[in-house]
Every structure is written in structure tokens, then in C-alpha cells.
Length: 100
Image 1: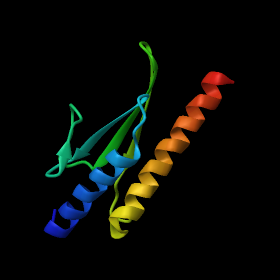
Image 2: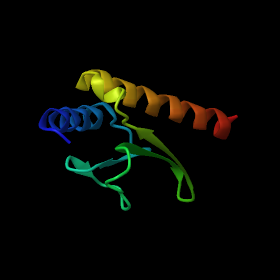
Image 3: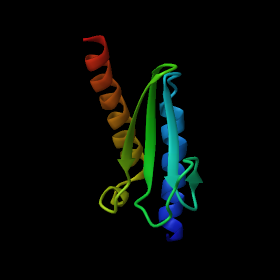
Image 4: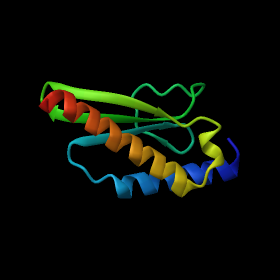
């Protein structure tokens, strides 16, 4: 990973962490060389954000948001906005199923 991409992804992590202050949402990262909080993070895999929506002790839903090369062409703000939008969309989908 080149320096520019690394710096961009570091900024994305910071922006997502600031934007997503939700006690029901856990965010983990598998971005080797930048932020790795996922237990099993394969350095050969496309970097991703792992979102866990916790609805109770035994009710957790997860989604991976992959950071592919196409997405990485965008600005850190655009990438962070896409990630936070995906998280909100994911939360809405789960809420509509869980709450009916």
C-alpha cells in the first residue's frame, strides 16, 4: 500500500469513528498497515469495515463493507460518507425485519 492510500485510509477511519457514535453499532477494521481490529484479518484480502449491529445479548447482525480499488479513488470524505450511509442503510434493513 502506498503512502497516499495509507494516509487516505487513516483519515477515513478517523472520519467514520467521529460520524458513527451509536451504542448499538460496533465498527471493526481490517485495513492492514492502518487499522486492524478484526480478529481474523487476512492481509491478502480486500480491506474492509466490519459492522456489527447489536440488538441484545444474543441478537447480533454483521456486514462487511469492502474498500475496493474503485472506492479508494474517491476522497476520504466521500469514502467515509459511503461507509456511514451503508451502515445506516444496514441498520434500517435490520430494524425493518426485527421490528416488523
